[in-house]
Amino acid sequence: MPTGRRATNDLTSARDAVDEPPSGRSSGPRSVVVRATRSALLIGAGAVLALVTAACGSGSGAPDTATPTASATSSASAAVIPDGEFTAAPDGVVNEDTGEVVGDHVVPEWDAQSREAVTRTAEKAMTAFARPGMAADQWWDELEPLLSSAAQLDYSYTDPANVPASAVTGPGTLVDDSSAYLGYVEVPTDAGTYTVVLSRLDGAAPWLVERLAPPDGQG
Image 1 (spheres, helix red, strand yellow):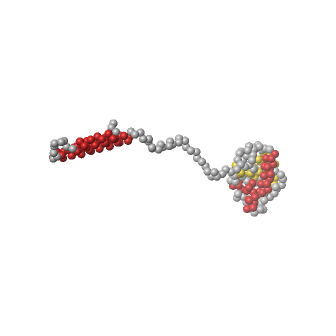
Image 2: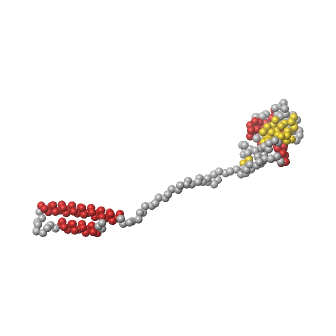
């Protein structure tokens, strides 16, 4: 393939050939044909020069400057939760709505501490319950914290004036410990012996009253 310089030389030779008419011939009507031929040759030579220049430029081996695109990662990035977005309750915190202790579950067992705790809670709850002469609001404020969420619903509309017992007359006695989650404690009152049913969610949770069952034939 001719280079750009050679194509330029060919164009110059063609132009010189058509500029001068053959010797001994005068310019006349034929000179018009000569000029037309010269114009055609010049146009054709120019087209050849353009093609040669383009071919030389495309084959010059210039590096491709296109920026390669980064390949997409195949794995999705893990979601990140900002610090402080969610705060877990510390171990040992009791849920105010359910009474549940937030933290590791402690399997309950009947030991001396559990027996004393269930008995004392039963006595305390029965003492708070057996006060028919107390104002209803104060009566409920002192009794409510000792009850489970279910018992709070059951006793929330109780009128203390309708409670038969007015005093606890002796210590409580654990009478049923077949389940480590439930305790049945009998508490004597001036109206007979009440059976206080208590429950706990695990070994670290407090005992809460489920029911204050009056003596047979009452309540």
